[in-house]
Structure formats: structure tokens, C-alpha cells
Image (cartoon, rainbow, N blue to C red; front, top):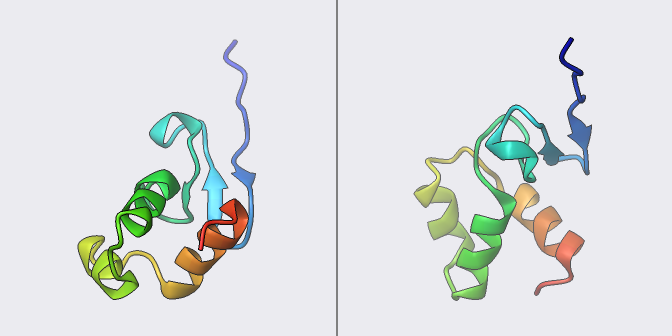
Length: 73
């Protein structure tokens, strides 16, 4: 019998679901990896461009939450 690991809600906008992206943190309701967005921010990409890049599937609030969770500013 296969054990089912539940989705972990890491914050309002960020979850880790073992069935999505191997359980790596993603933005709720998407397959957008938090790490990918943080890499884009670290590379100097504008938040509006990031949102456009991901077809408006993430919000400024979600990005802000990811940044605050990692102390990246």
C-alpha cells in the first residue's frame, strides 16, 4: 500500500506537494517553483516581468511572500 504524504502549506501562497514538482516548494495552484522565481529576482528581473513570464499565474503578494521567507531583498 502506498503512503500518501499530504500537501504541506508553507505559507499563504507557497505549498509543497509531493505529487507536484517532486515536493519542491511551488506557488499554490501552480507548478511554478519558488526557487525559479527567486533566481529571477536575484538576476535583477523586475517583478512585473516575472509575473508576465509566468502568464500572471503568480501575484506580487506571492512573490513578496517568497522573498520574505528567504530573507532575499
